[in-house]
Length: 134
Image (cartoon, rainbow, N blue to C red; front, side, top):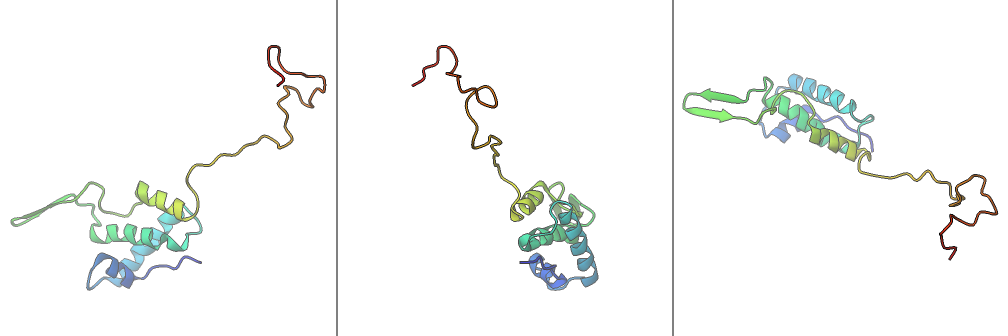
């Protein structure tokens, strides 16, 4: 499938907001897509979750405020909880969704390789001294 750009309404639903500024949401979604494409291009269709997460962080906390007091109420947010950026987890998720990630190994040895220490193999080679031919 092809990646479908999330809408401002979807961002509002994701954040649980009854009303959302459509133009601002569209801008943040476009910027979140650009950031995501710096990691994986083309974006996989499941990347919507990462794009909404990135745009949502920036929508609710654009100035990256970490501590705020209003009257008797005080709120402390975790460091790095605002602004438009990709976390390490976001990058890992994008790579995983695109099928990139995880460990793998490549064996460059040809199938026809011999344990002989020379190439082409020496037909008279019987192994190293002291090795058993069994």
